[in-house]
Amino acid sequence: LVERMRPFGTTIFSEMSALAVRTGAINLGQGFPDTDGPAEMLDAAARALREGANQYPPLPGIPALRQAIAAHDQRFWGLTRDPDSEIVVTAGATEAVAAAILALCEPGDEVVCFEPYYDSYAASIALAGAVRRPVTLRPGHGGRYAFDEGELRAAFGPRTRMVLLNSPHNPTGKVFTRAELDLIAALCQTHETYAVTDEVYEHLVFTDAAEPHVPLASLPGMRERTLRISSAGKTFSCTGWKIGWATGPAPLVSALTRVKQFLTFVNAGPLQPAVAVALGLPDDYFTGFRAGLQARRDRLVTGLAEAGFDVLPSEGTYFVTADITRSGGTDGVDFCRALPERCGVVAVPTQVFYDHQEAGRHLIRFAFCKREEVIDEAAKRLAKLA
Ligand code: PMP
Ligand code: GLN
Image 1 (cartoon, rainbow, N blue to C red):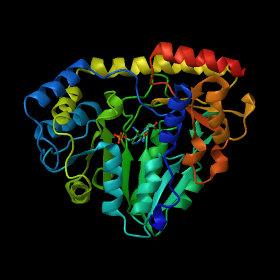
Image 2 (image 1 turned 90 degrees about the horizontal axis):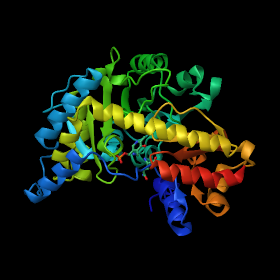
Image 3 (image 1 turned 30 degrees about the vertical axis):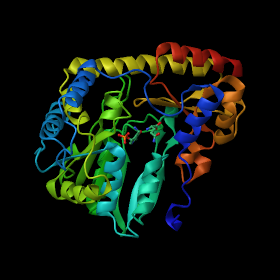
Image 4 (image 1 turned 135 degrees about the vertical axis):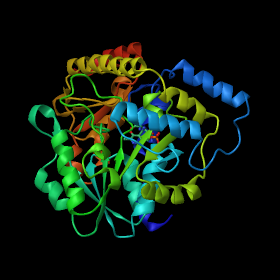
């Protein structure tokens, strides 16, 4: 194994899902729903399979999907995209993030990101020979995760090539505020950097969030320097399909596509028309999906609080984080490894998503994208800890 990949072991999601299978515990670790997405989408996939959409689709994705992505981004975010030059379909958001970094970063270039970060970011930055400059999110006022402005300013320098921003944010459930985005946008412009945004949870901002989701690309001066990434997995409960996309100005999409063509070339022919159908579903689907997740968040948060955890506010995503200190824990990794034996539930330590691990040592993440009866059973088991 090459030197630059040696620090990366098995992902924590695989480790914890394997632990859940081995112990028969309820898996609130890896974030995947335990119910299927919209019937219209599943029917469209079955039709496409039967009707022969089984050969290589075009490199940027089938036209119907690119048109649906353009219409979706216009409908929800007022972003105008040319389906022929400003959109590329990828193997999930994961490939889009990797291809964006590989396409834009020379060895030694720096990528500003926020920790805890989604685990593939660090590996993709390392694959490119680039250097990550993490800015720490810490629970502040009311438990809301925030970063220090000075720390963010200090992270930018002459080698900064891009900022990699995930909002709504996994694992914290933080939705970056307009003021925070304005600061990030100003720094990108002052330092003439790109922005790559991971917005796979764009439809999962709860009604009690302090502010709505705003794509960084929609801020003044940002369209021309931003690649906006999303994916069908979370919005349509099909994480195993791995259909994602990147949108942005033609030169950036073209650069990303140049790399993408040699990573996977194209992706999942019969699933592309189905995702096009899903993206065109009426607003009711999206609001109903969000309301369902919000109700399950509330159920889990109540259970966690009764089990003795200090629960931090989650404004969006599939996830909520909790402080284990009051539950007698000091180290999240040890705590999560022991949790299935103690009470039959799996969670994920967020410490592994930090460079400055001490900042997250006492924090763990629970996924609430599960059926209500599963959440209730998990809560019952966790109550044994109290
Ligand atoms: N980014 C974030 C923040 C995620 O939580 C995930 C997991 N869904 C991904 C990217 C990966 O998305 P995909 O499965 O579409 O590659
Ligand atoms: N995005 C999912 C999570 O955060 C997991 C994806 C994966 O297993 N790589 O739980």
